Structure formats: C-alpha cells, structure tokens
Length: 183
View 1 (cartoon, rainbow, N blue to C red):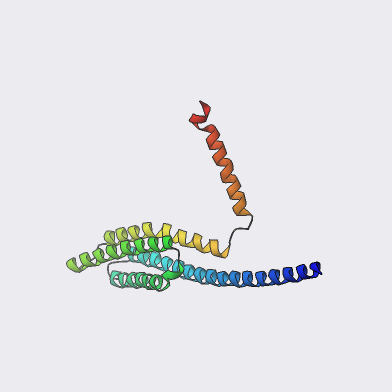
View 2: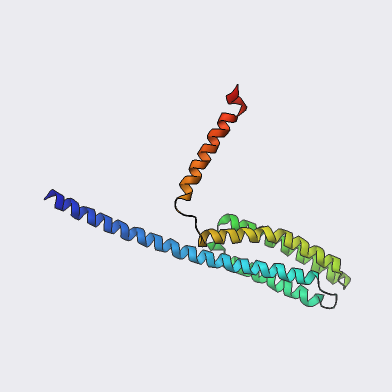
C-alpha cells in the first residue's frame, strides 16, 4: 500500500514539476526569441548607419547634401528603434548604444552646424566624421552581433561546468606560481 501511495505522489510531483518547468522554459524561449529579433534589427540598422556615413564621406560636393540627409535618416532610425526596444536588451548593451548615439549625435550636429555656417562642405571633414562614427560603431556592432549569437547559438550545457573547472585549475596554477608561495 505504501509503495502505491509513493508511486502516486512521485508521479504527481514529477508531472507537475515537469509541467511548471516546461512553462518556465517556454516563457524564456519566447523572451530570447524577441531579444534576438531586436538585436538582429539593431545590427542591421548599425550597418546602415555605417554604410551611409561611408557613402557620405566618399561623395562629391554636389551630392553631399543628399548623402548627409541619408546618413541622418539612417542614424535616427537606429536611435528610434533602439529606444522603442531597449527594454529587451541588457543594461550594459543599452549603455554602450546610448554612449554611441550621444557621440554620433554630437558629431553629426557639429558637422551640420559648421556646414551651415560656411555654406560649403569639404570632403576631408566628411571623411573625418565618417571615420569617427565608424571607429565608435564597429566595436559596438560586433558586441551586438556576439550577444545575438549567444542567444541563437547557446553553448552546450556541459560547457559551463568545464569553464568553471578550467578556471579553478588556472587559479590553482597561479597560486602555486605566485612569488609568495615560492618563498
């Protein structure tokens, strides 16, 4: 009789535990899907910003107005998309994107102010602006892509314990090789 009760209790607990674990897992999978979608969109927009600024840098003076306008549109599309979706991103990623957008906004504004004052555009200034934007954007874009890949292609379950073991072994070796231990 006790064996039957134990089997029933085990079946109920296992079934309900599996059910709740499945619901939790499915919820996180949906959240990860949404986050991956946002990161993918931001990555595409970052590429567009980079491309339009490069096009602007290498444009002639006659087509510069159109290229500056195109770069501004791409930049503000990135900004609007980021702020509409920032709740899906990790805090660290948000801070990096905000730092970049503030940097780019300042530089783009300075460039447009100088341009308006002089009424002509020098190719070297466009090239310098493009370099500054690209220099800031490229590493950020890489991080967003890496974060996206971590969601889409998570490491196998056994990698985390292996990394912990490897880290512990490194610390042991470092402790053995430190000057204080050798004395």
